[in-house]
Image (cartoon, rainbow, N blue to C red; front, side, top):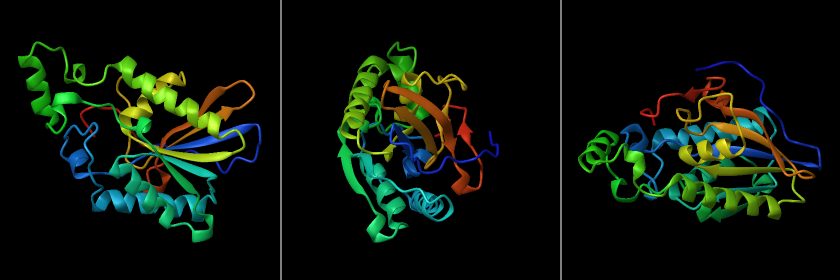
Length: 230
């Protein structure tokens, strides 16, 4: 769905850490509905263009400046980070720290399968869903939340950071942030969408401001509500 909404600017409150949570750009595997998990896939040309558009929007339209960027260590996130920051003047490019813990959920033995094949594979093995392979939801959430909590601890003197991660990771974090506006079992944020969260340093609370904003792609806020669409 799409709707026109305002985009939050650079945070100037020292008691708040504003998190710009960015999903990586499109990969060929996304467009082909292939389950990536921890596979180290590359952005395709569309994904690179999406990331460049986001970088131009952040720096030229919104004047967003990051104190630091934390990125999943998988290539599709590293490449997204590189393309976004390439649109900034060199003197305004922040330090980038890679974090294994920001990776997508590992899909185990079905990584690399087409979604349709993974569903058939699960059925043949008596599984209720292809989601029953790989990391459990509890394992996934523990890894992610431990990583984000450590990032918050490292960022007490900062006011604006970007976290570049994956669709499933962002959905899992939104559950942890107690976000309830959309059905979290079906939500997928679009490639290079920007989700904005304010972390209040005094009480360690997260306040979700925007989810899945894609104004840089011309769509206002675009949230994919069908899990089959990647």
